Image (cartoon, rainbow, N blue to C red):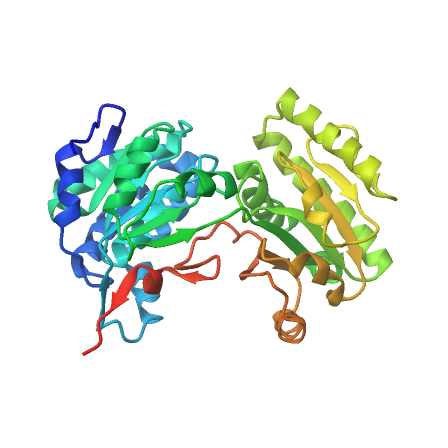
Length: 400
């Protein structure tokens, strides 16, 4: 049956290349040509003056440079019996600008051909990255058969076609997108990797924070974790839990939020609709949960709500655009209710002894928490993500 490509816009690659991907041979993981290609791509991003305006693009460039990739490879001592599964079909989330590029690179490093549906929103970062991919492919054309980046709407026929072609399908768009894409059938041996809706929170030791000299740097890191994506990323903390004595916690909170507000005022433009939505969320929370109170001032940029308890429903009351729930804890085990949920993805920490975190996870074994990272590193992508090891999941094992 002939396929109609009229509704597909090609940002990288073309119709002929896409059709040829079905029969393209898989590569070995961390193929030398792929590593070289990514290094050239990284250098082009670093040299692009427009990239400097986007911290997420610079982070991508840093992540895929040769030294970084070779460090990743060292964590896999023996990949000699593995090769890419074949064609990987990636569906990127619409609300995070650069995720599509990380998914693509994971597919390349694991030896697959890759068709990536980029975000539907017209992020400037997408155009910038695609321009540099095209320029790098012009120099390193040997990788051209392995990359095709497309944009299309909600056409089920396209989803059906690409799903029928692929050996692995990666769905990053959240629960609703997963349900929609799964209406398109796969081949019997095709594997689905679904990255569902998740939530994340931060744990800050008050004494540890107060001992830090450069508090503006901490504010910038937390801003990058949260405001940079409007808290739309699954990795973005929406709850901040303070650990420590009452007096220290009070002082730490005052300084932390003041620094964040000052930093954010210079860089974030609060839209009226976002401000109204945050106040509405607070009103709705107040009617359903006892003893909550607004902890922030009237400016509404950093909107804080102080809770008097944590439970299994706490994270259903989160928001975005600078809307933060807060809780004051005396002991680390008080975080258990928000950890004990498969939706819990990233725990970001500041001033907390990592031994305490390990001891808590070992003793309580919560259903959630796939990552523990320092504040400022929540957006840092890794080949181990959402509990999956992407190199192993995107390759097949040949036993001889």
